[in-house]
Picture (cartoon, rainbow, N blue to C red):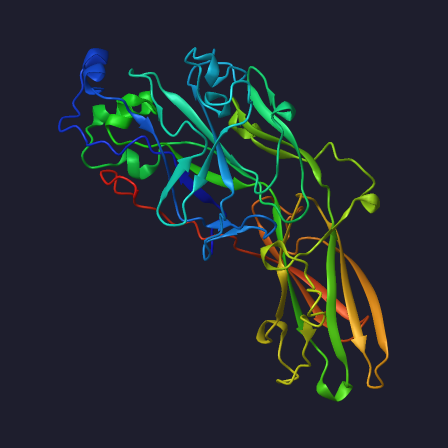
Length: 411
């Protein structure tokens, strides 16, 4: 996996293409809009996601797990206020939760299907239509995993939408704004004039009639940490070693800006969480599905086997033990990491050790960057003899999605 993004297609299509796209002026464009154009959501392969305490979203699992995405859409002009609600019906806000729940400040939720590429709006309002004109709209989407954000905590101003978040190490936070893709701009059936119109009127009922859908590429706003343990002791040592816990100190309180007239301000800002670094909470690594790392009925699940291969083998030549799923933490310049080990000696005596380290990115970067994945590697020689290094590794492999725009979703 080489890219960090996943993406969602907000489809306005399912309508047949017009045979002649050579529109001439607004009047001809209006004539092309001869039936209601529904807003629908088409979801690409979830490259980077898990849900509900399972950490980051990855491409090799049906990982959305029913967790919703949330969508806003606003009229594209300099005078539109993000404080305007869909329930106001003034044309400024096309999509938000107030469409069916007046006064609700959240984005309108949609659930991602695990059976096909389409997501469906939740709640009574199952279909939303574009205004029957050429007015373009911007689309924003965000994902907050299993977090519950009360409507009253959401701030919607003239220029921005944001709310406070508090992470626990298991929740993925992502957001996106739609933008035309190269494949849309280079579509062979479009003339140069079509492309000019598409750029000016994306996204609208007019572009929907051209089967042009808004495409939003989700960006991760947290840092993903994975943990591998490499045994460096032999059977002759008589050691039995187990991992009991891994913890990381991280800032946890931030402000998530999910829509803004200045796109670079979209993301999670943890700068207000200015507690003493040594007083920051310790986030605990979880197991698959957000379960406790060490099951009550299997306390020895992470046994570190002695190394039986070539004693001269380098770290990369040895097979590691992957511990838990991953931790999703706030971007920072360094982290305090705790590795809790348990040793059972030959005579059955149990020893415990909390090994504490401060890690920095080994790639030469000044900080751990959002959307990046880092593997923390522990070389374990004994209960208190551990070496540690950090490597930057890919998170998500990007990829592409082809959607047959003339085929409606199943069901």
